[in-house]
Length: 207
Image 1: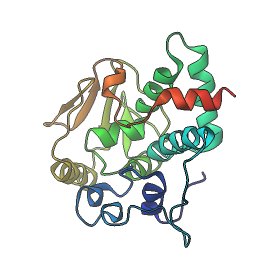
Image 2: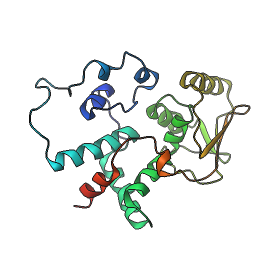
Image 3: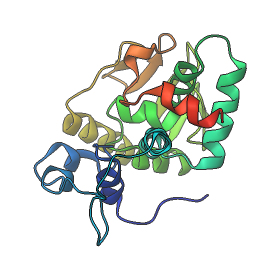
Image 4: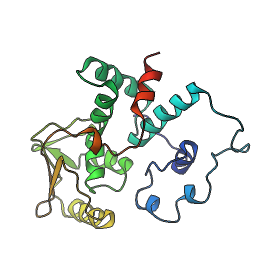
């Protein structure tokens, strides 16, 4: 499985926005984007206005890096969104939001999507009583997600919940007693956690 091995904070600086790739550090003053607004590289920010293509490309790259997917997988998500009924851009974002690694992150079970992916690939997460090892698993209404019933995993999840402030999402319900996540319904566009203009992404990918 391919993954980004370079400094994650460079990705945030390149997009000019916090992508929350480093977990709790992104919420503190230690976040490099707080004091270094210029993109990485020895030449710094290029002068002049970006082209329309550059603006659309940056929106797509921001979305890909936020959810931790690469180009080939992102194109598959887009092709699926085109075939769905309704707005293509909204369909794309709602599909990405339903990824299992994202669900673990927005519920505070993991401090970042990278850590959520690690939990899943190492076999520490169960969906409806079965171990799931694919981070791109899309949850459905009625699914029950729970960590492996091992003391070290449960303690880690509890500490992450404390660290992230017990986040809650309207379409997900967290049971603190047994640390389970119940998918109450499908998410809406207003509940998508990434701030992007999906219309620009559709314009770019439809070319």
